[in-house]
Image 1 (cartoon, rainbow, N blue to C red):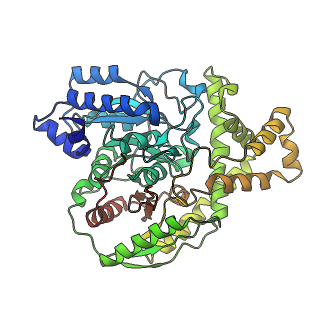
Image 2: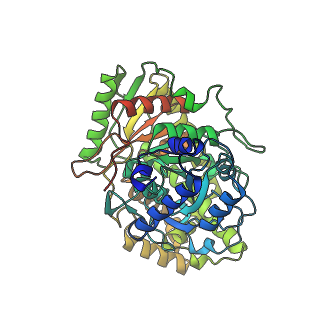
Length: 496
C-alpha cells in the first residue's frame, strides 16, 4: 500500500485491510510516520513522537479488536500514557513525573488494537480555541498554513486533515473537538457527559464540562470510536449505560424525519461572518430537501451570562493546576503569561462567585431542554468566522501586559475592591469567544454535539456546522450525520 491508497481509507477500512492480510500493522505505521515526517515541519501536529512505544506494541502483538493495526495519535492533555509525562502543552508540566497508568481512554484504544505512536499538540492547559503553545510551537492548518487549526485539539485536526492518519483522539471542554474539526474539514463529536470515562486520574474534567472523543474523516469512524470508548468504569461519578445497539450498527437504521431548529446569531451578540451564516442556511436547505422539518428558533437564555460562566471554569481550574504543578516540583514562572494571568484572576474570584456560576449551568440546561421539547436537534454554525489567521483571538497584548503588571505587583486586588474586575472578566469572555461562541452551550449542559464539514468558503476553507441533541442522544446525532454524509459526501475533499 502506498500513501495515495492509504489516504483513501478510513480507520474502519484500514482495520479490515489488516484483518484480511492485505496490509500489515507495521506497514501502516511506516506510512503514518513517513507522512508525519513530511508535514511536521510546516504543520507541527505532534509534540511528542512515540515510535519506540508503537514498535514495542507491535512486537508484543496487538489486540484483536475493531481498530487492530490502525495507527493512532492521542492528545497531550488528559489522555495519559503510562510511563510518559502528560505535558498539556506546557513547559512547566512536560518534565514532571510520568503517568503511572494509562487513562481509560488510552487503555480502551490499545485494547481495541490501535497502535499509538505519538501525542498531538495543544495550547497550554487546553485553554484556547487556537493551538499555539510556547513550549511546542503553533500548529498550522493544512488548508492554509497561515491560519489556525483551531483548538484545543488542533494538533489532532492537523494530523488527520493532512493524511497522517484517518482518526485521532481529542477531548472537548468548550469546543475543543468541534472547533478544530470545523477549521480542518473533519467530523468532530463531543459525546454526552458520562458517555466516556475520563478516569482514573480524574473523576470529572472541568467540573464535568469536558468529554473524550475523536476527530475523523468519516461518520462511521466516529461511531466505531465511540463504541470503543463508551461505557462506565469503576468509580465514575457520572456514567451513561451503553446502548443496546452499537453506535456503528445504529448508522444502518433508517433515520426518522426530525424537527430541527436553526440559528446563526452569535449568543454573545458579536458579528457572525457571512460564510458562517451561509453554512447554516445551506445546511438547513439540505435538511429540508431530505424531508426534515426545519425552522428558525433558539433557546431562551443569556449567551453573555453563559460565556461568563464558562470563563469561570478557568478561574476554578487553572489556579488549582498551577498549585499542583508547583507541589510536584514545577515552577509557576514556567507557565505562559496568559495562563498565569488567568490563575491570578481565579485567585481573586471568591468561592461564592464560582459556586453561583456553576449553579447557572442548570439554567442553561433547562433552557436548552425547553427547546429540545419542541425540536429534536439544534443547528448552529460551529465557528462565527472561517479559520482565523495566526495570532487572532487572544486578549489584546496591551491588556494582558497591564493585568500581568498588576498581578506581579500585587495590585490586582485593587481592581476587585474598586468594582472594576467584573468588567475586565466580561470583556475577556467576549474577546476569547468572539470567533467561537457557539460550542460552550453543549459543554455546560452535558449534551452531545457534532461538527460536520458541510461547507467550504469561497476561498476554499472548510467551515463546519454544529448539531446539538438532548443528553444521551449521541446515536441520533450520528444517524443524522451519516445521512448528511451520504447526501453531500466530504471524505475525498482533502487539502493539497
